[in-house]
Image 1: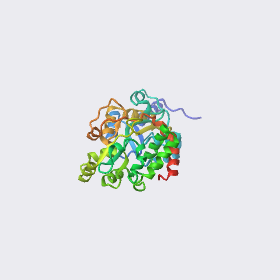
Image 2 (image 1 turned 135 degrees about the vertical axis):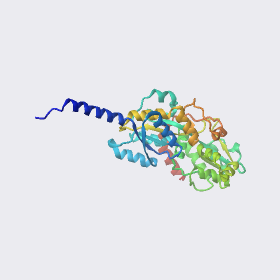
Image 3 (image 1 turned 180 degrees about the vertical axis):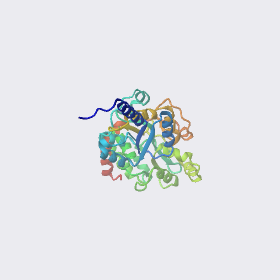
Image 4 (image 1 turned 120 degrees about the vertical axis):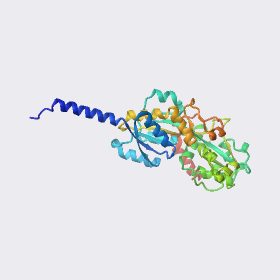
Length: 340
């Protein structure tokens, strides 16, 4: 016959288990594809405010998505934080996220910048940069203008397979339809100054050097160079102009940094607290000041000289969840027209 556990021991065991549960809530396991040193202050502030320690694993988006899927129900990950709406939507398609209901998130984040299981926390825009000595600003007022034959031999971009360009193309498909989007892509390819290569900073510097007349870039790369203390960067920025595209139509295409709580998160309460923190005024200012992105919470005021210089703009309000709907089609079209 099994001997009954002494009452004192039962009480002690229960207390230990309760203590373990409490300790467990003070931990958050974050898988992050954001690789910005300034985010360290963001995480430190969250821990200071909540007492929740962040254990972080960083990696490339595709690697993290595959890792979470392979870990399955045993995954220690609580939150996936990454850039680009298409990548967040991919995580949703893979069934990695769990729906989150939060009055805080729903009240602070605009509806077009969230879905039922992932949320945007910062915004960056896809802007047009041009060489002031080679191209007139009035000739590059929209993304459509990049396909105009007058820019033949003047357009530089990064790879058509990069998610930033795929998301832009997905937005064009959503607004104009696949046929018009393909015609646009053909026109852009016909105007290439060189084969796509490098990142957005490389495109900006190529425009400044005169290798290209015009290029597309995420806004925060432009802002970084604006804030640079290097003489070479200052001289480069003197040679280029920046255009907010599509101001008379859909508005500039925007992309996001965002996050979601993972399906098998062992610390779901802490995970939701982290997402709610990312929507706080303090965190929103970290995004703006640290990586030159715009807050998604409209009431938050930021003091970033580069963002001030770039000025106000009309942003596309296409729901970010729609971008994944056309990302596969975008890649098919790019491949077909030779945009690689």
